Length: 361
Image 1: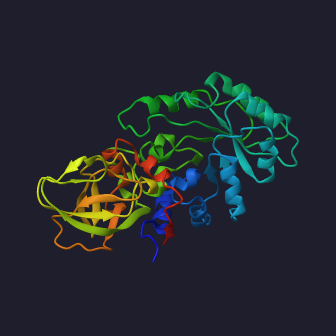
Image 2: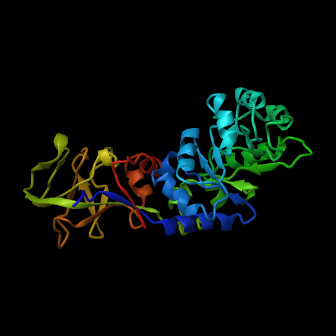
């Protein structure tokens, strides 16, 4: 029997979340973001599950895009960071990869390339996040240069990215939208736009444009810290599971794990679970972080080690070696665990290593 640590991936929940995104912006086309191995869920399997209903996919790099092509994904694939060297332009054109363009060297590489077919371009505008994209007063010139190139398709998409859309009380998103609309290039050609990430799809309908780009929400987690009516409809896609592999009784005053950072205040029963930071469970998880054993919340005790954690199961009426353990999933949100660890659910999902088998259902 193999080690019981695994990630169960619910593909029906994935499709539900995609369909929710589409229903909230029915006049937009929805591009699933499958970068970073589909936020840890397995890019190839996620793309295959969504291929019948998704018009395109989004990834960070050409390597991620090629992996999808090599595994039978035929839709256009948007490279969200564009090209890193000029030779990638022809490779992108050959494979129907769409290119994000955010700086002048990328513009020049596309214009100067020798291509057998035109390439679709997404032109990034920096409306306030100050990470990527042309400044608003530079967009017209960049657009004109690309639209006049025989290498570029007519339907250029103008896009930007929000810095604070997950903060429902912030004015920053409204200001970014205004900045975006004010500086759209003037043209006689078809001009498509894209603004909405997960948070904007869920809560900022004024950001719904021709294309929307759901990421975190696809995998069933809310980008908000507070309840939100649309986000509350999401279904968790990953259930991170393991099992109890050892049980022991310790006396009050005895400690558990590396650095002895937890000491029993009473006679206690400790369950050892075969999962650790080598499996993506955060070492920063403090004592008291909830773990589900047989569906009951039990506190983590002692330092998370590479391959194991220890859990106080003193109050469980019954517990045995082999009992199911859930680290996060539908009944224990990854955002809750992330908050306890001082991070965000995005990080816990995306850094899950290949060591953990993904099981698709």
